[in-house]
Image (cartoon, rainbow, N blue to C red; front, side, top):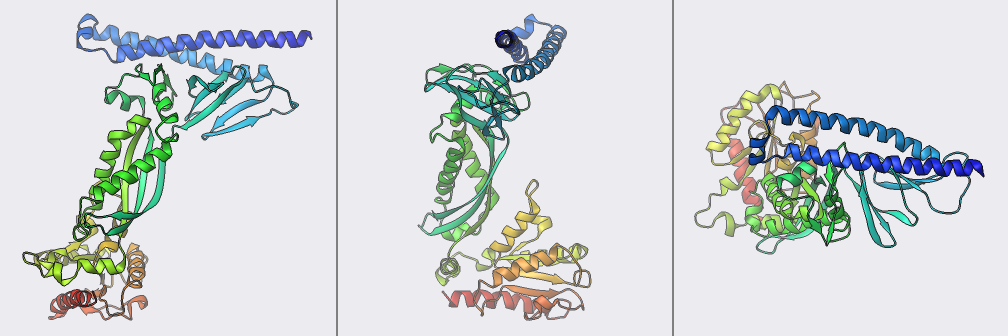
Amino acid sequence: MQDSESTKADIESLRRQLEIHRKSLRRLEEQKALHGDLDAPLRLLHSIDHENEEIRRIEAEIQELREKLQVLEQDMVYSVNSSYYLIEDSELTLVKPAGVLDQLGEPKVAVVKPYNAVVFEQGGNITRVEGPGTFLIERFEFPKHIIDLRPQWESFEVEEVLTKDKVPLHIKCGLGYRIESREQTAERGEDPREMVEGRRFPGIISEEYPVCKRTIFKAAYGPAGDWKITTKGATITKLREVIAEFELQDIYRLDLAEVGRRTKEEVTNIAHHWGVNVGTVNIDTVEALETVRKQVWGTEYLRSEGRDWKATVQVFLSYARQDEEQVEKIYQALSDAGFKPWMDKKDILPGETWRSSIQRAIRRSDFFLTCLSANSVNKRSFLQKEIRHALDIWQEKLDSDIYLIPVRLGDCEVPESLCDFQWVDLFEEDGWAQLMNAIQVGMERREGST
């Protein structure tokens, strides 16, 4: 009985020490934030040296308090000597230490690991918002909502995305987002002390990724009750709105990266309402039914007044790096002839991922020219992957379609995978004329099959 009373006394002592240190830590962090955000009039009253010295003093006290808190939190778990809640990787687990028998009652401690935030409720009422740390919890208090502070990534497909002329498209997307950081909240000019639904949630959580407690509340109780579902749903809605501005005939000339940027901007304008910052929206592919795609190349479009059909034809250039200089001349010749050539060196923008950019370009191109030479044949390179990707696309086309054209830059063997295709020798006198004729005939066959 005496040991039990001693344990209770130890727990109460630790509880008091923790509360004192937490209050001191919150006070110091608020002081630091004040010094870090001094406006112009205040700067006139405080010298820069004094301000920097005060911030360093506060930071030192904060670090000392954090170290004390870490020791106290560990002591708390050991002193309670019972089951406890563990929040890690956005999952809640009830942990029973070795040697602890099943006990009546609820856990008295919650251990929140880094990059997690928790909203506690008691009897249906919100009691507090906490970040990483160890916390004594009251009777009937429970970790109701767990928010993952790490970056999130989702890949998904959207069906029946209608163009302006009501043509359905199939779009594959990638979405990167995470809970809005304290710095991002400040950049928007939002005061973390403002009330949300009649309540205040002042303070910052998480040393690894500082976030306003107010932001965590918005994420936990957002429009759909789930910040991840809300973000994905909003992205799909905004993507539909962007695509609806264009007719089908314009879709395949669009810069997909620009579609992604516009969608991201639209989602970003509203995502902060549920505590989220959207980092990127990637549009990987935009596809229509094959019968619908052919309508783009129909006579009514290509032959209409004022249209130059060549300007709509994208020609992908696949090559070995050693042949770059020669392929650049082909690129320029195609451009001079009125076509829209695509070459990784010239058409991948800074910041874009080259692998996904190449795959999108192959899928969107009307013709695939694989430039062959002694430098590329029988060598392992990304060129071989490009050829395999083009062969997969060729399988989807009609037998009479001209799509994949082997182009020999010099006298060399043709890979076995391409032997079924008639190649053109660009080094021969009539090589260029043969290539131009193949592209024109290829377009005419597509028109005739619509």
